[in-house]
Image (spheres, rainbow, N blue to C red):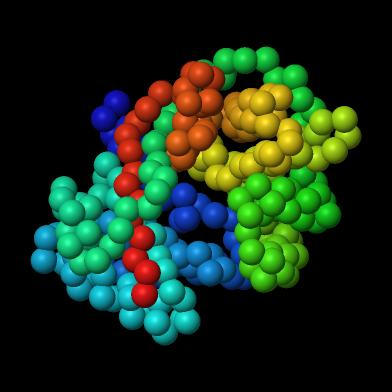
Length: 256
């Protein structure tokens, strides 16, 4: 069982490594860590450093950002990260805790609640773009980044379809698309990888319906288990649906 938990923690703590294929996505595998570049977002995942290796790793990541014209990166320090005092060492090097920290969770049985909102699996590019627009609107993504990501999404769509490891869902209220959810299907579990509900549609069961839709698909794929790294808004909802805590991820941001 310990081995299974370790595998699930690793999956939940490294969502950037499981993002669907996209031209703007790049993964740099270094000695003791990975850097994921997704547009202008950058994350450091799978951190397995020894104590003397922390400061050189930070300097290497900063050099990578400088070379690519990027100005900030988030280090994901989870239960599997090493050394054990990694967070404190990163703080000493000038990194700062992000306002929202993450909780890793898992569920291995049907979620609670009755889905009462229409949910459809995305099958076409226009639906995929609609789903992303909901995400960007919910999280107030700047207009210039939206333009960049629209172009990237158009280029990515054929790759995502061919890859076949992920699905995107749209939730509708009175015929209006108001929520989106994505999952990537790994051999060990489905990983919830992004979701959002427009402000005017919150509190009406959209989130619950999207979780149920992804649960049904992972069951159909023969892996009845879902993991996620959730922020403070989503964690209480997921726990009410029956998700159980695996651990925590401390996010530390390095601004150049």
